[in-house]
Image (tube, rainbow, N blue to C red; front, side, top):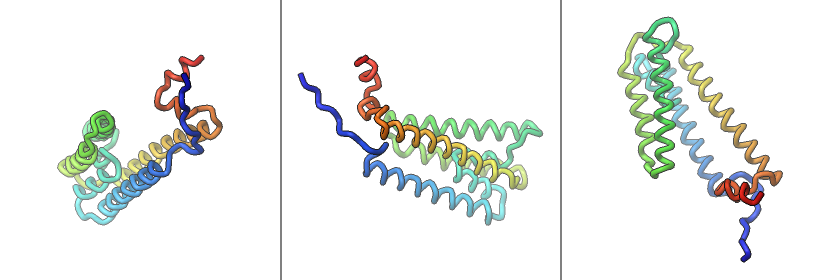
Amino acid sequence: MHILSLPDRHGLNGPVTTRRLVRLLLIYFAFYAIGQLFFQFASTASWQAFGLGLMVPGGGFLAHAGIACWQGIAHLSLAGFGFALFMATVMLWFATGNVLLPPLIWIMMAYGATLMDHGPVRIISRDVTLATILVVAAVACIRCFAASARVRQGRMPIATWRNPLRSWLKK
């Protein structure tokens, strides 16, 4: 019995997937830009927290975060929980196809951060939010470039992506 092999690929994604990923990144950049506008030009702390919440899921809770008091630590915990909740909804989206849940949770967390008004927003909150974005983006880029290099070098054929046991069983 002859098994048909998959065609060789020269990159990590095909052209359709690449276009969709670029579109997704442009949408995220629009969210970030709108959040930055809210943060810079809003007159109230709640709208500034909403802007931080648009930049990063759960980022609005970083508006009043700190380690000097228990309220600041609670805000840090809420930011971490919010990001983890968003990632869980993304996994649920992949599992069930529920496309509306991740953006809904993101917007609801941004709105929830506006309800916690504890005075003026710290300017360092924006820097922490930007650092979070940069760390997540750097990790994603490193993983993507490493996988793409393995595909180009032939060390990770496309067939092993769909069924990792197939390459292990051939040994």
